[in-house]
Image 1 (cartoon, rainbow, N blue to C red):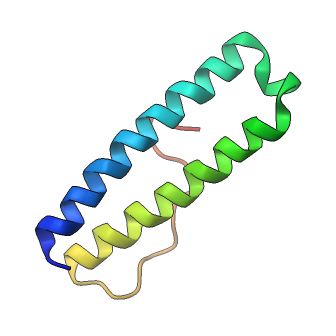
Image 2: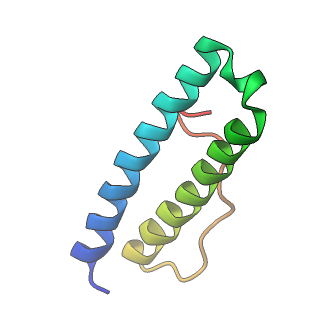
Length: 78
């Protein structure tokens, strides 16, 4: 995989992460985080997986074969 491929995937993951963040905010604003708790937790798990994949692609682009420990929080995301 070349740098352009990694960048394309990072861009796609950034879009997905923004959509997840918006959906999480809507869950919280409407009280669905309590009534649809399993779905809310699943969204957080999806967010964590997307962040991990993004970190892996960013490290691969930088030539770092061992990604550093993934931060659990990202600006603007839960």
